Length: 213
Image 1: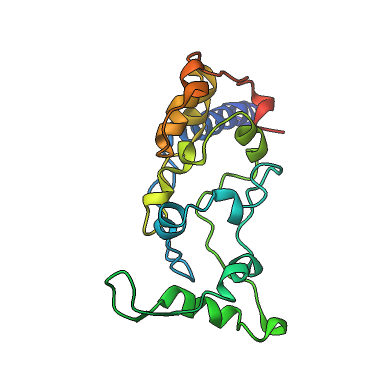
Image 2: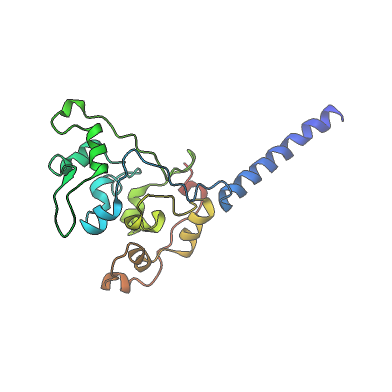
């Protein structure tokens, strides 16, 4: 093979590599769907969300005003658990018991020793490639519920990646549109008058620069 022919193959190689990368991203061949790592603290979402009625934004405090939703700081947890300790008295027909998650939390944040509190090394589950931007605040402001992308976290004993989060999955939502009523149902809420009236799906731009910038 002559030197000229070798050089001629380089553009073809890059074209094939680019096409393969785009196909993988669009189809979800490289997706981490189902990823459910063990966390340093077995945080019970059903207890906090369903039983106690806590809003997602209490812990994921920046999701409505920042591109990143924010992972809970140890101080956020201790805002309640400085008072609510691991030893649970007998009540509601349940015997006295010890809460292992709160007990583990106190190894990171001894209640009476604030100077010894340290960050909790949460394992990130939903992680997009570095070349993709997903501004949480725009989606929250548009009425997209957390469960639309993250699944019914309020039901999960151990949180896992619910959706593929690949390019095709995102583009489909932007093209077909998002119905507020669907998001509320995914969150386990009752569809109110405002959502019922919003029958037209909200669509969004899907050109490259929307996510890749």
